[in-house]
Image (cartoon, rainbow, N blue to C red):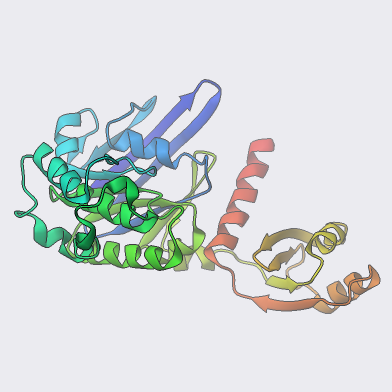
Length: 307
């Protein structure tokens, strides 16, 4: 076990950023911390990388307690959400600089970053600040890996990156995982959860659940329907007045609907909407996604807080 987190809590004034966070990450595991902006992901990463102290709780990273900041900083790679390399240095200069900080060289650990670096090597003389978003992320990952860390922390690494670069980035993470590295990655993109071995869903600083993506979606536990219409706003408002409506959320070009009854009557719902003047309704039973499961768990969590 490369990361063990036990009841970590952190507050900033009246804002509770983290509430009794507990989970673990094994060697050779790609673990996702999934949740919206403001959920507490960055705060937890700063604590685990010894940049911030928790108010309570404990954690062990790469075999060291978080109080042993020198040992942890030698043993982990950290890629923060915002690009933090030196924009006025070239690609090659940034990489050599970070290697020298850890007392190593690019040549010594080149094999570890080769698959990533070959994609940016043609731009090795270009200043880092002039790189595209995807290239910046690849350079940042190379700098985080150059000292061969036991644990890799990636805080929302694909935010603002184009879809092709996002796909390539996750393929790189999968190869690192296969080499035995423990990887903790945070993201607000729910579709990236399916690329992880296990995930923890976090909302308002609280871990809602920790499991494999497949197991989390199985726990959704109720019929789910996708509604397609040209008038999303009006249909949403009218469904909220439907006696059996439980939840209705926008998902891309569809609305996702759940009913209060164990056995919903989709024909009745369609008739209700037609009675409201909606005649372009397409209603389909669908399987829940990790995002549906998150919304369900977040709704339950919010209800508990308001009780």
